[in-house]
Image (tube, rainbow over all chains, first blue to last red; front, side, top):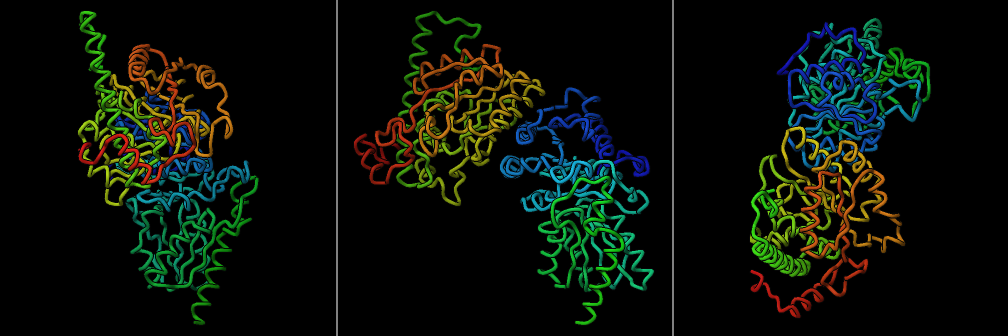
Length: 324
Length: 290
């Protein structure tokens, strides 16, 4: 990363969206050519922090995500570094604009989707975006970053400023278990983070499910297994070498994501596995729309994205593999 | 504007009229030649939207032919043109050829895999600032460019050619509202109002309501013009460019203008035989155009 503006520990108490707001302001200070565009969600996404500090470089197009993507494209064509910030769910109505305006011309618009996954637990199925990884990762030249927590949101947003191609960053709202500031790694787009080496089974995770997967590993270790844990903060381009390495090393892969398993991170890993070193896999994630709930935790429970569930499924997979 | 005839230096009235008449004649020659090129391309390239392209020939000729926008583009500090109704792109290619920027060989290979002249605008083709083809997206991009130019302090304009059928897209009105909100007087939309869309006449497919009033309600000043009359187009453009107001030009046009089989019909294409027969009537051959 070319420009680390704050230490991870300085943002370790933040929520994901506050980390986004802070990162945008820091970028605004560092780069005079950053413009932030939003769609009437400046307050909710914390893009407003940037708007308050740099009113001349802040554009609000109202509730019009499709227009927002087009306006962002036009601004990028005139040489600005543009961040288009809105709720992940409603950015998806502009998928075709992302495809035909941003990606087809390969302009460096950075699209940030907040309130992704189950983070907006209260608002229910209409607001809980569980499809964005799938929709964004299929686009050529689109970098897709799914940070695990606030310190990683901060680093991802800062790192994306130097990208000369389109980028989608998927972040949550307030719910978070910040842990990446305690881990020793350099954030590098496209490079997976091996949190724990192992040989019985590899648990691959992306985004906010990292702490849950980490707990699952602890359970497995207590039960005498030796699981590997790898965090993929970048889903596209995917770190295929690390995937293949752990496919060979463990012979069994469990993927965990806060997203539909169909087309999501697990599917992306499977695409690599079947073309490199084929091993049995289990994909853990959502299987249908979310529901209104009192907290994201309830939704993780509802879809079986819990340390206990992950550990049980991983054990099952290891047993299947041994029977082969 | 570099080509503004009403600048600080005042020509004697007679001379000014003479220059203007020459300019009009010059532009008409380009438009006529481009129209023939279009029919000729359509005899070779099955992906030409001939009716739609013929509808915007004069509008684009006035923009390119007066140097408002240029075929050889570079950098940001310039006027921009976006053909939001990207399916009419062969009109740009034909005008480029009529003005000597493309050869007949370039045109004939348009729409082939290896050609930069794709059947919808792609970056990399001569004269193409913005890739379009998906309707209404060009309008939002135009708004973004106009905003960007203003933020950079550049006194430049963005011309966006919009189809009337395209106005069905919700994004069109999102974009027009954004431009109006930011009072982007350097954003100049020109509606090619030929009253026909893919499935037929606008009045039957989907009424556009009172277009003038829809734009006026957003705060635009609306100018209507005959989109095939070069003198009127020149006058209207100069007026709008110097009005200091948010404006939209509604150009009344005829789809398929100049090709009797297509004029005012939803028919988009003619057969190769029809094209060659027409060219023969016009006494046009590849050699003549080259």
